Image 1 (tube, rainbow over the protein chains, first blue to last red):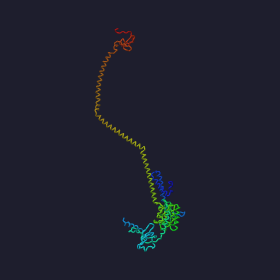
Image 2 (image 1 turned 60 degrees about the vertical axis):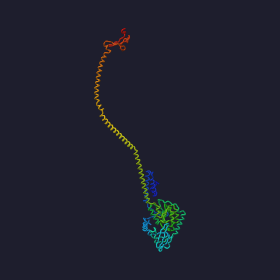
Image 3 (image 1 turned 45 degrees about the vertical axis):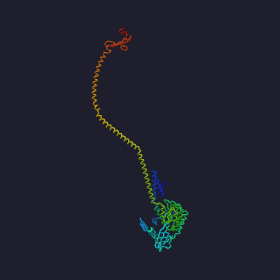
Image 4 (image 1 turned 135 degrees about the horizontal axis):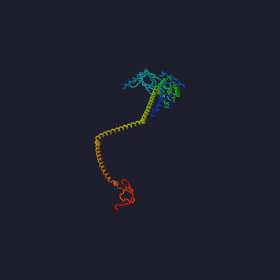
Length: 80
Length: 439
C-alpha cells in the first residue's frame, strides 16, 4: 500500500492511510528514521485529502440504459 | 419554575409559531363525538395521535365524517392550560378518501412478508466513503433535489447516478423495480430509494410486494427515505438502513466533509506533534549520550587527575611551608633559649681558660725538659765511664773469637783463630798455647 502513488489515490484510500500512518507513528517503538518516513508520507496524504476535498465538485449523472448523462443542477433547483 | 410559568412559556412558543397557528393536519378520525354543538375527536396516524376540538361543529362539519375516515383538518394548535394538553382548534374539515382498505392491506402484506422471513434479512454495511451513490427516484421530485443538495453539502467527492422512475401511480412499481435493478448492476456503492411525503395511497408503490422483494434481493446496500417522519412503508423493513426522509437517507449515505476536514486537520496536527516529540526524544538521547561521552572522555579524566595533582601539590606546599614555619619558630625559640643559657657564658670563658692551661703546660713542659736535660748529662758521663773502648784507648786489646768477645782462656783451644782489636785496627792470630793463671 505504501508503494502506491499518493496522487493516484482516492479520498478513501488516502484518508484511511493517513489514519494508519498516524497510528503507526503513535507506536512507541518506532525509530526516528521510520518516523521521518511516516511523517513525509503523512504530509503527502494530508495534502492529497485536502486537495480532493477542495477540488471536489459534485457530479450528478442520469443513467439511461447504458448511457450516463451529466445533469445540470442549478442552485434554484435545489429548493423545494 | 412553577407550573404556571412553564405553561405560559409553552403557550408563548406554540402560539407564536406560524405553522402551529395555521395548519392543515392529515389523519384518521377516531373517537368522534358531539357534546352539545361542539365536536371532539382525535386524528391518528400510526401510533401518533392529535386531540381536536371543533366548536359549533353541527353547522360546519361534513356529514360523512366518522371514525376511520381520513380527513384534513385545518386550524390552530393551542395549549389547554387547565388540562396541560394541546389540541387542534379545528376551523374546517376536508373529507379525505377512505383509506381503510389500504391500511388493512398494508397490515396483511406486512404479516405475510414477515412470515416469509423477508424482514429478517441481515443488514449490509453501508460504505463510509462512497464513490458513487445511486439515487432511485423521480428526477423532478423534491426528494431527489433534497438528496443532491445534502450530498453536495456533505460529500461532493461522490458522484450521483440518478435512476429515474415515476414513484406514483399503478405502473410505478414495475418502473421502480427496473430502476433498482439497473442501479444494482451499476458501479454504485450504495443506493438511495427516496420519495417525498404523501398519503398511504401516494406511497403505496413502496408497499408493493414486487418492490419489497426487489429491495430484499439487492446486492448493493439500500437506504430508504420514503415520505416524512411518520410514514412507514414496507420497503423500510427490508432496506439495509431506513431513514424517515430523503435528506436523512443522503446523510446516512455520506460522511460529513466538515467533520472529515476537522479529522484530517486533527490527524495532521497529531502527526506533526508525534514528529516533534520524536525529534525531541532523539535529541535528548543524543544529548544524554554526549554528556556520558564527555563524562567518560580521557580529557575529563585528565582534568580530574590534574586537579587532583594540583590539590596534592597545594597540600604538599602547605605542609612544607607549615613545617618551615614551625621549625623557624622553634629555632627562634631555641636560639633565644641558647642566647640566654650558661653554655654561652661557659663558651665565652673557654679561651681564657685555655690560655691559662697553656701557660701551665708550658711551664711544666719546660721544667720537665730542663730536668731531662740534666739527667741526660749525667747519663753521658756515666756512659763514658763504662765505654768498652775506654781500655782500648788506654792501650789494651780486645780478643774476639767468631765475632764474640773472649773473656776466659777456657773459651779458646789451641789453633783457634782469634781477632785482636786495637784502637787503630785489628790483628788476626792463632792460639799457640794456653796458660791458665796460677797453673
